Amino acid sequence: MIRLVPDQSAQIKRAPEVTFTFDDALVSAHTGESLAAALIRSGHMHLRDAPEDGAPRGAFCLMGLCQECVLLLDGARVEGCRTIVQDGMAVTSLKRDKHV
Image (cartoon, rainbow, N blue to C red; front, side, top):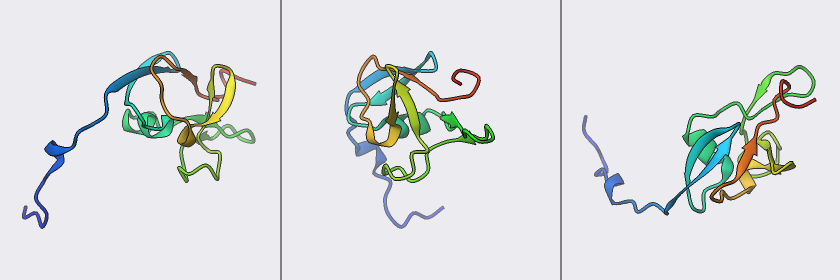
């Protein structure tokens, strides 16, 4: 495969790693990353269930307009795309089997 632009990904300097839990699973993220970005990167696409029919929902606009990425952080509802990860956070999805 011919690349038009040289691969420079090895030169990217990432921020230090932190960890948090999502539904009791340990997730690693980089300082400054949003919860939604860290969850998507780690393969967690199902963030909540739709209140009407229980259909799986995930991040959509990633800029705080749609509220599809709403999560529970220490019992408070937050938008995952507008919340920056911090080491040791305990984040929970809004799935019907966990919350009514």
